[in-house]
Length: 141
Image 1 (tube, rainbow, N blue to C red):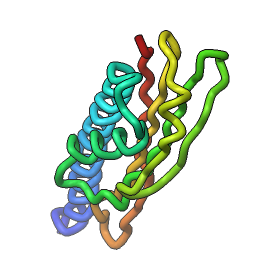
Image 2 (image 1 turned 30 degrees about the horizontal axis):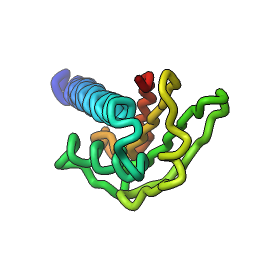
Image 3 (image 1 turned 180 degrees about the horizontal axis):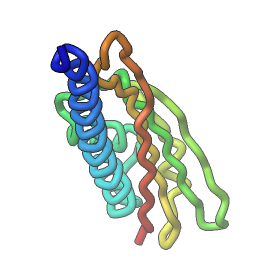
């Protein structure tokens, strides 16, 4: 009788813990992908013609088993006068901003914000969904 009472509570705790661990792991992967994209934009300043497409391709390449349509990108490029130009948010892999290449300047930051619509493990009959968001910056040299 005690086992029948404790089992649902135990399964809820185990499932919740596993769901939290998977979300934390996914958040870490998303952060690494965003960091790679920001560093690539900073390093390739003056060599790329579409910083947003480069961001999208870098992130999707770093996250091969993720659904690209659930990824949302925002790129903020600071020009030589200190003005910030924001492109996005745009979901999916068709992210383009060719005008952003002209705004890229040396010693100015570029920020890449990447969000992913994450679905948690179902706990009992409840299946929550939320967005994991990572924002990474790099200085263009």
